[in-house]
Amino acid sequence: MTTRDTDPAGPTSGPAGDLPRLPSAGPGPAADPYPDPDPEPDPEPDPDPEESLQRMLVITGLLTAAGLTACLNVTRDIPDVTAWLPQPGGRDIKIIIDDDGYIELRFWTSPGTTPSHVTRILTGAIAALNGSG
Image (cartoon, rainbow, N blue to C red; front, side, top):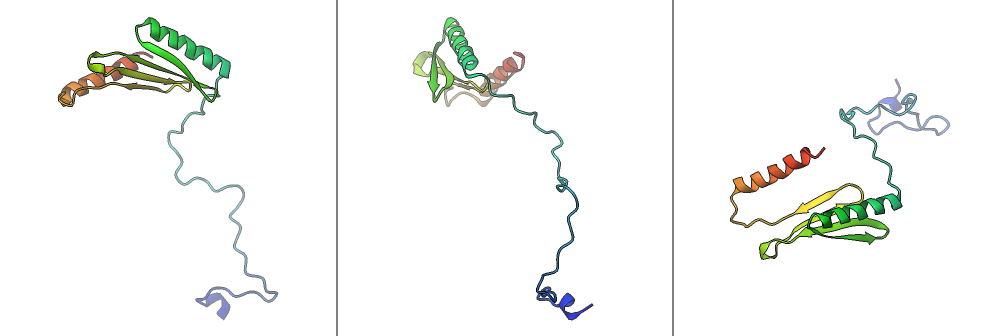
């Protein structure tokens, strides 16, 4: 072992001025040390824009037939549906449906509503959603 191998300042250049090379890491990419045990499925391909628009138009009609006020919106060629159900006191139930499948449901409850009643409302809605298959 030479002084240059043990020098705390690090290795010095070799006789031709080249720095020592690190050993190869081996073939191919390194394996992920923390693989995802439950990987997400591949996303579905984007729907045909015309099919998506037709689907959203049908949803708008069905919500209107069910008694909600619904309108189809198209922003930058991306359709979504906004619907609402009027409630006493002007605090409508509002629904927003995106063309990629996301649905947002918004409603108001009085700040005085008990936590157990709020929980029953939400768990009932979740149970209805889980049963919709």
